[in-house]
Image 1 (cartoon, rainbow, N blue to C red):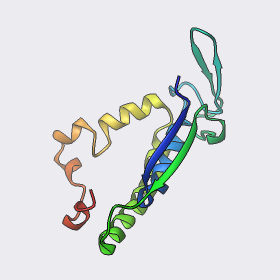
Image 2 (cartoon, one colour):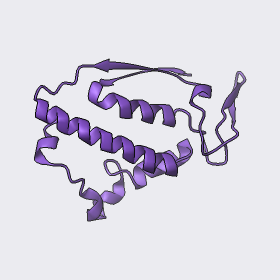
Image 3 (cartoon, helix red, strand yellow):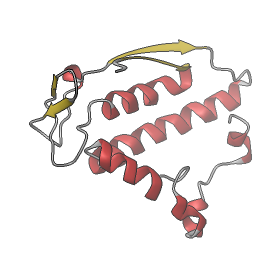
Image 4 (cartoon, rainbow, N blue to C red):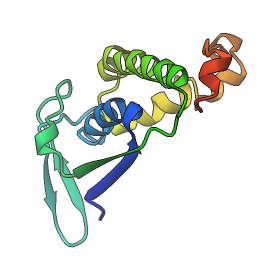
Length: 142
């Protein structure tokens, strides 16, 4: 079973990426479990024991996460500033939204496919979910 992950991304994306990976990889598998994770393994199965749903304990995660930063890849200073500002807002959105709503891998899976603006299938039905308010300039950074 994979327990060590190396996450590679650019500088402007690192803070949000780190927050997301640390939170997600500290979540319990299901909402009925809570998260002071201790993992018990036998040769045929793995079981999880948790104590708190709302406050995952990053340091007790069974995963070792390593983060590696690479160059920004955006040479235009104005575009880079736009992207950095967007990332700051997205990090706040993650901290004030996702982290307050999602407390298990099971719930995260449901949330991604029902609520996430980039991956949700409901965006094809609900036109309001398609409006990300991304400027043409910011689109150049994708």
